[in-house]
Image (tube, rainbow, N blue to C red; front, side):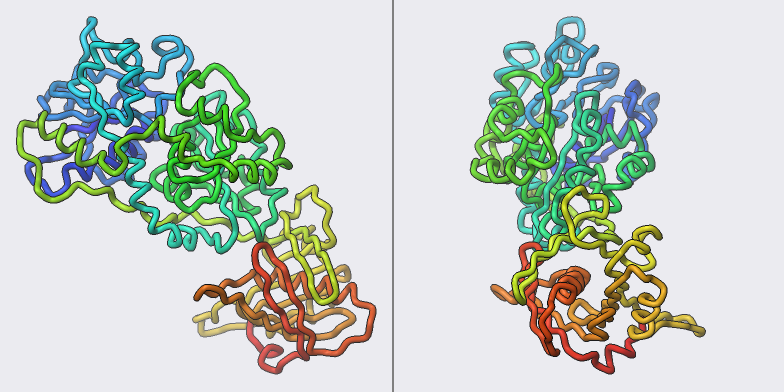
Length: 542
């Protein structure tokens, strides 16, 4: 059996279908790269990463195949010998690509691609919804005669992975924060092309301890631009904690892990809606979105994000909607795609299907993680012994009270300007010759070297810090985690250090340790006790 691949996105789509044939030694799968795509280099790299057995195109066209699967009707598929099954490339047939095929039609419904000499060349069009069959019937009736609705294998895989949501969030380091996922399709009307500054603008305004931001890009964008150049273009946002999802599987895991989606007109957001995630539109219009398509219907009804500063307001509006209804026009027969597709494929193969069930594979845990920011612009709201801390990237335009930086990871200018310097303890070296600072020695050195710094803190564990303040002296900080519903929730100790620094700088009344502070950090409230420095903290090796 041959899987004919023209783009990385089409490959990923077909890989979600492979469980149809699992457990059957009679079926041998081979992949081939359909020539002619501007994204073929990225597709070839994706094929290599998949560990699939690949046959050259010239060899593929010389042989008869018992079955051919593809997720794109473009290219010279007609010259391949054997019954051909065409799957949708995405969800909903929402986009048209200018200067290709028939005007205003997506390739999956376009007679230009579906017919040869007026006759359909595919033995089966496996669709996800009756709405797709209706449109195919209108645009290409002879191809519709060979179509059937089986459901969407990719959606079924996402639905089967919901039980792993906590595991995905743990891998991403999300904690109790709200994960906002930006999704961008490819092409001149994509979010990243039209609004390349949006990831940086959003992350500069979102409180770091309340929100995590991730970006999901179409595989064609990886193929066109390359991971190296994408990382360069997104460097400020990545340094501030943006998660850049990998193009295969990870995008789907982020939708499962996410709490809301900001989208252009790419169909990824329909999968998010099917999961019940609030959706916010960020598409500014153009010629690519097909009127009346499922994506067009959804974008007409969800809140629209015009400025980055309006995100929290748009989130509230999106949360007031039931987004699952938007996906009803794109997905039918949920949970049934693989069994139905197996039945159709084995009918074309002319053999009985295996008796083992065809079930979707759960998505793997994400491996792309956020960088830990090394500097924060911090806003502190103090009311007695209660301190609210809101941290932003150092380049934010928000009103803040002080700069806190990690030494030596932060930029030199940030270290020189910071009122708070911190350092996280690291595991002991296994080298035979070592030299290390004690917490007391390092904090003293920082105040000596940095005249603008008022607080230096060694973060010993998630619950212990040694803090040295210019006027208050040396203190131990004990952080009590939140315990609720059988779970233990911890805040970043660097944020607690900023709370202690703000309180110490604001208090004018005489005080004596111990002092217990309530610190509101993102969704968490933790108690921090300031006591005279403990000997075990003073001598702790960093």
